[in-house]
Image (tube, rainbow, N blue to C red; front, side, top):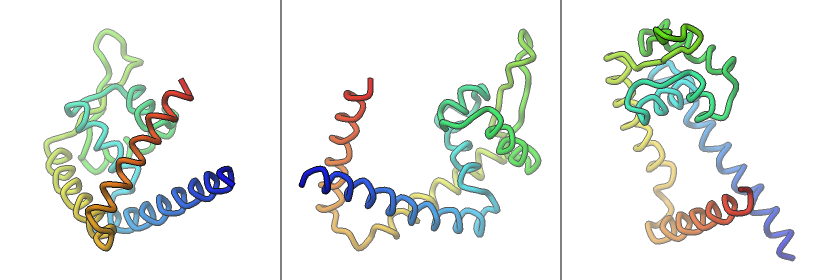
Length: 147
């Protein structure tokens, strides 16, 4: 019985995540002409203080360096990030938000927060709090089991 509920819960989480991501993809393209992975990369750069190694970004986003390269190429072309080689090791690439990229990310992050709030606005604050606490507990259990 609990096995069935665990599986049903997992599928529901995947379904809800997919629905939210689909809406976010549409909104980011419409409002900023960026993809969700581009927003995620800019968020990772912002979290890192504005500059990070390409390899660290791929670890953060859990994708290959090759996948990150394509995302960085587009953001660089649009003037939102810049790529530089480390002086002492030209194989290592540092990716940085440009001033325009930092300003754009700030606007994107503000709207992202509003979009999520709108998507979940029919769920009471109490129910959101319970859901959040349960998901935090789930994360702790999973991290402990998978170490």
